[in-house]
Image (cartoon, rainbow, N blue to C red; front, side):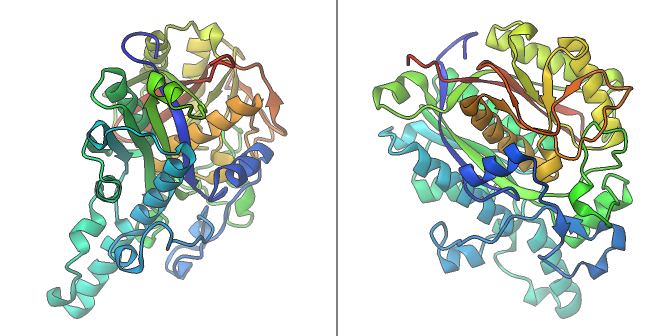
Length: 416
């Protein structure tokens, strides 16, 4: 970061997402714009209306290298995904050599162990209170991933959880970077995790009109910024980044994926689910993130948009982008056409996608964006990945409750 304090390097990435359970397979799917939506496999979806029986689920992977059988049985899928992604990021970063008291975790989760909560509620109603699991509380709490990682790694530095709905993953990365910037830690594991492909969550989001109902062709249902968008596709997954004080990373010869250049967060203070008119909160958030990075809008090479595929969100964000960057002023992409919407995991996997894009000099396409919306004056990258010069990228996340978060990521300078 350039505005004040220490620079923050990204030295490790880990991901468990619908697009892939390792960074390179994930990036290949994102880069090629291949949708991951399909019929729900994790539970009997016949309990749902037909139009909501599809989602973007994480492919099966071996959990045993991350959590032993007993630990896994006493943790929700949200924690499974988060711990696995985080430990992959640690492996990618390599041994930091940092004092465990100067290492910490910052995790984002919107609802925590929802699948376990629903399952145990069913047990309570069918079999009575004495059959409810004694492990329910640690399984359902939103901070379970952060706590589990701290214990597993023996890291006694800052250990925090943020629950700002769909902004939580980006908030976790930005807040962790601030902790390093101002000297409270040297290494932070930061990201988000969510497992909302559950009967109750699907029912709730469907009832509020947030989900796409294109069940006849799920792979084409999520279509960010397209005029025919009708809602998002629910996704699940997790991603974590290892953030490290720049000088510490350079001294140990770490591979540096990129740099956290700037960050901002604010509140619309407008409505519990709807964005502020004209994207006012998003405008301020992006402007503050750029100011934090010491950059002008013209320096930004592309934006990884929140881009959920809902009519209201996409319009609001597009209007905000025009106010910050001008009409068609910067290439815009949304990876949610591929992955669906991972709630708290969204901003974290999008940060991973952004860092891969920086490495390869490509803006990934917005899957299923078949036509430009004449009401949205932005340059949506679609059809195929677009080459761009190396430079700063803004990644946006906006959550129910009016939470806005923007992070500015940059490539590692070639000479460092």
